[in-house]
Image (cartoon, rainbow, N blue to C red):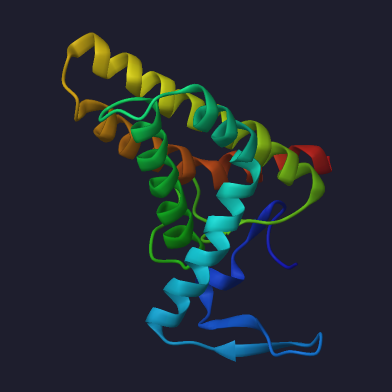
Length: 170
């Protein structure tokens, strides 16, 4: 993977994506805007969802379904994180605190960082949103909280991962 440590800028700079063509072979395909968005959203869904499985399971089995509750905030935050990641990976949105476009590379260390970071962020979104909604008694407040915190979290993750990967190289 070319690019700075911890980062993969190529998908943000080109309209080509690797595609599975059957029988164990990968090809590079040029895609239009909609194809890029779909490809990047599928990638982002896996990149966010797989590390969050432990927390999503805990939320699923331990909390009730209620408007403005833990599950609602978690769902909105999760979807915001997926969409934000797709937009950053595709180059439609510039990540915060860095001039390097694109998303975070897949290295063993950065996969571990994803598990810690995304679960922590989603817990803050879910339980913080529920606390905020119960404290202020405004049931839509957790949804706004989820969008803001989820967007800021994925927007700043590439800079954080890049800084940590650069520091680990030294």
